[in-house]
Image 1: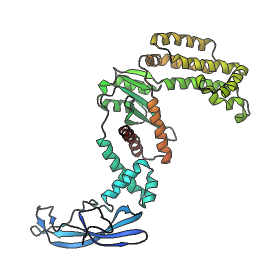
Image 2 (image 1 turned 135 degrees about the vertical axis):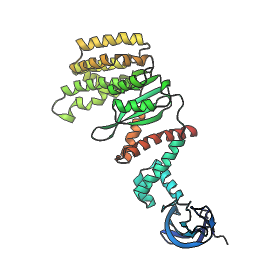
Image 3 (image 1 turned 90 degrees about the vertical axis):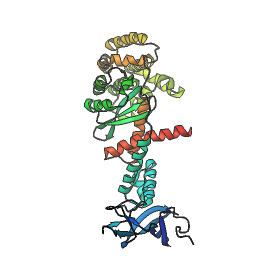
Image 4 (image 1 turned 60 degrees about the vertical axis):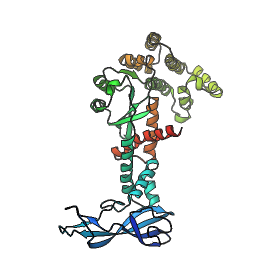
Amino acid sequence: MRDDCITIELGLPELRVIAQDETADAIRVEVQYRTEKGTCPRCGRQTPKVHSVRAQRKRDRRLWDKAVVLILYKRRFRCWQCGKVFSEADPVCGARRRTSGRLREALGRAALERPVRHVAEEEGVSDGLVRRSLTLVAGRLLAAAPSPAGTRVLGLDEFAIRKGHVYDTAVVDIEHTHVLGVVTGRGKQEVETFLTDLPGAARVETVVMDLHEPFRQAVRTCLPGAAIVADKFHVLAHVHRALDKVRTSLQTERGKSDELFRARYLLLTGAEHVTPARLVTLVDLLERYPVVRDAWLLKEAFRLWYRLPTRREAAAELEGLEDVIRKEAPAPFRSLLSMLRTWREEILNYFDRRYTNAVLEGKNNRIKVIKRVAYGYRNRDNFRQRIMLTNLKRSRRNRAA
């Protein structure tokens, strides 16, 4: 008769099954290690002399949707040579652990895809156990994951880790869509520290960023040979905000019932994406609000400007747009002149190196989903770990394809 199984194999060949009992909610299995001798940690000799036996309760992986409890009869040996008393090793669970290693592995794997609390409730364990298991599994996976070789194009963008304007900075290899790291804060010193320690930093040719001066200073200091590209979508966001200010300045006291308020997204939509039905509404609105029409046309002019084929044409056309803003544009657009002057070189660099932070914005959207699913994170390290794990998900999708 076999002594290493219950109804099915326990799957722990190191243990000998002594007895088992199944109830409606749990399976209780009494086990003991098969080894007959213990190795003395003091003198290294083996001894079969058992000093005492204690029953320890251990939690194992669920079976048939029931909790599995291992009652491990753990022995203490006494060395015949030096007299030392010591406990036998516990490779199944680990020293001073009340759960099996395979249970912790299963919890960590499950928590890679689902919120910690959901996994804990389903398995009937504490949030802390699931979180510790996730940290171990994630740390091992991230350590074994290959990093992209020869990073040429970096993206820098800030994201809020919680309300109250607490920000961190994500650094992404844009060509390989790989998160290289998460920087605490968004200041010059923090980004400089990260870039200084970045492997292969000398190979970086292009850095795409939003219009955040500390980022620019850090890149100029640490990556002097890299060209800085002001992210196209952040530049256009300034244009969109100017248009929105024009719209809100003309709204009445009726609030959400105002037609300009209802048209706020329509005005920001690219002309080529407006449906025929909505186009009728847009044309009617622009005819009745000349100031909004001027702002909308300027917004579209900037969008078309980004489609010019060469830097020389873009530079010449930009001077014309600036002249229009100075002479004819609604007042909110005049604030763009300072931005265009301060970031002119970086904005025009786009026409030599047509990279954007679209990949990074996609990562930021995933970051928002991670926060929303977990109802926020109080621990920054746990949050960063979740962000880095998005690299593994993409690698698995690529292998499957």
